[in-house]
Length: 220
Image (cartoon, one colour):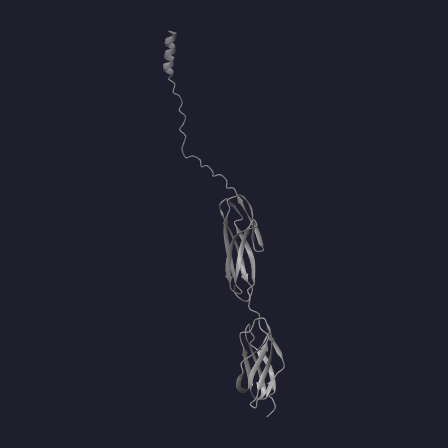
């Protein structure tokens, strides 16, 4: 026997970020091997089992990479068949993608020393969980940072609380979202009216009979 096997029906299935299955058929029983490369070339270990339907499982390959490969089969007589060159591309590594929305500043006006609550919603629109750092800036100065972990397709609310000891208008920026709040001087406390009742004025008591008697005595 000097005729190599005939290779047919080459296909690639179950492609992931780091693995792929390559299958093919031969017209006679033969072993299985795949040469594959992105750069440089690599050979899978020789599978010496003699079969007609062949399957090779590639592992530990690089995500988001195009690989070239050739299938090889050798029959019992040692005749080697090598396929034409084929390609496949591994999947990209799943990645998180974040959006920030719904900036809330409450209340929008406070007195000196009172607390303002600032919150945003962090949503992960990607296909993998990830960490995101939220930075709060007030009057263009970074005042606080918080790290949040968000699952794929989920969202998390991030909240900051701040208080200011000077009156004025304060700008707020959380990533690309912006808003403001105002700090006012607290009005003076109202003086409660006294509960004591002022005593009535005491009218001077005049002894008119005594005065009349004195006047009469002087006249006499």
